[in-house]
Amino acid sequence: PALEYDRFLAICHPLHYTTIMSPQLCGLLAGGLWMLSCFISLTHILLMARLVFCGNNKIPHYFCDLTPLLRLSCTDTSVNKIFVLIVAGMVIATPFICILASYVRIIVAIMKVPSAGGRKKAFSTCSSHLSVVALFYGTTIGVYLCPSSVRTAVKEKASAVMYTAVTPMLNPFICS
Image 1 (cartoon, rainbow, N blue to C red):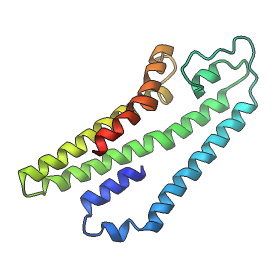
Image 2: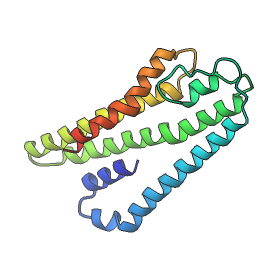
Image 3: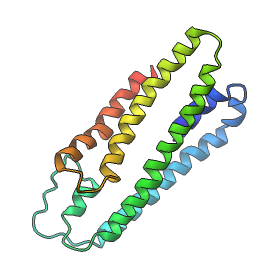
Image 4: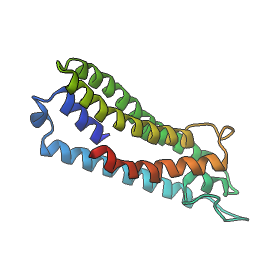
């Protein structure tokens, strides 16, 4: 979300960018997101610590993700699942909607650029970024917000590879 806000300011408010995006705001964005992620992780850990696991303890996944781990518990996981939905809505869906809204404003700003070459360059930069955003958030939403009746273990593994490995590998291409 911080990168998208930075991009939004740079494109939609270039004259005021340095005033708005101060070192204090950068620190607040980075520190706030770091604190939020630490709080969410700690809450997940504490909720998982109260569960009992019995029987097969082999996770059918390539990393220790929440949803496959919850399936291995032989106790009630409803509180954990509710927390996952709340966090997914807050940390996944909300930024995704805000990013899409900012891209609407970015597209409006790009359309005001007088030269066709400038519009083309701006659209090429934004389209590659937006496609990776859609890939990341689409697969993450599919894993954490879709009903379990729709998901399969194979689809979850493929989606997890997309949002944990493929999208970070695409970042150097987007930034260059």
